[in-house]
Image (cartoon, rainbow, N blue to C red; front, side, top):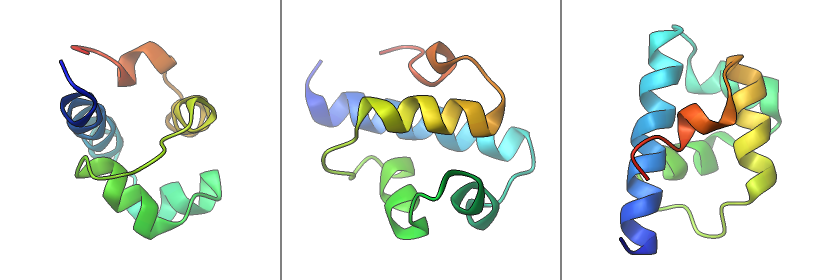
Length: 73
């Protein structure tokens, strides 16, 4: 599995978890202080330089274990 596939799966997981909790991108941006444009790129799998710290920040904002965002990777 290459990096592009990993980022795509991660983004799909993030979007599914966020939408499952009825959290908008704007709300997630407000909670995490991550720019909404960057969140959109993460969700569509085109983010460059995704940091491990972002995984933990996002999982905390969604109140889930970080491993849930990495399922199927």
